Amino acid sequence: MNPVQFDEVRRAATGRWRSILASMGVLVPDRPTKHAICPGCGGRDRFRFDDLDGRGTYLCSGGGGEPRAGDGFDLLSHVFGWRRAEALQRVAGALILNPEMPTSSQSAKPSRTAIYALEVWGRAAEDDGLVAAHPYCQRKRVDCAFGARSATVSGSQIGQRADCVVIPIRRQGVGEIVAVQAINESGAKQTFGPMGEDFLLLGNVTDRNVDWHLAEGWATAHTIARLEPACVVGVAFGSSRLDRVAREIVERYAPERLFVHREAK
Image (cartoon, rainbow, N blue to C red; front, side):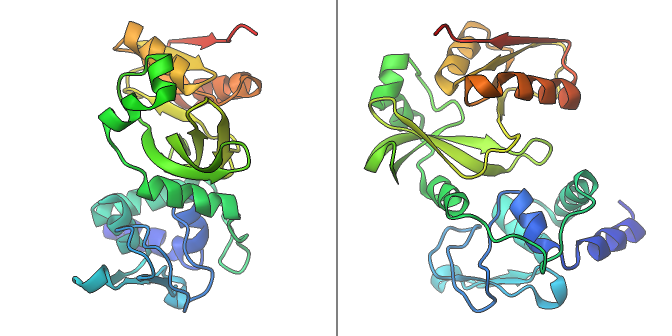
């Protein structure tokens, strides 16, 4: 991107930062003075999003360390560790995918479950041993994290403070988390956040020549990956979503071979 293109992206993003950040799985407070969990460092009550002049400005007090502040591009760098140039590229991509992205005055307030999904993912432990030791994984012979994490989660279907495997649901093209699926010890599942057309892909998605597989659930996807380590595996999160997600994979990634796995009822 040359300087002119940088300026074009900045201008296009002005006033749209809440929508841009939400499309990448970053939820910010709805008021400039409200303190919240920092989406970058995870510290509680240390983050403010004041969005001055529509530039996506923020402040993270650093919890006694060095405060961090800047515009929306700096915030993306804080959250994802991107260099500023990469943040600009990602924002440009988000705007291209959704040119009618609403301004701050038009943006819908994130749902409680969407906020909870990101909070759960932010504090979940990324540890192969913890995930593999979970009773559900033991039964399903899942021997590694396979993209998942471990956390206590509360919900109507999984119970209060349940020990869960937490699986991310990502927005394709952006790659950021928009929802999570939690699975408790007995195998009960509950999704938090808006799934929409989103799903999970694991493997080298730039390699269209290997076999691509799409499974209903995460544990089945793991089994496929164990049998064929070089493949790309997708998780649709439900039988009713298989055909829709398969079409999205074909349209977006154009793999040479895609095998759709339907579980016997």
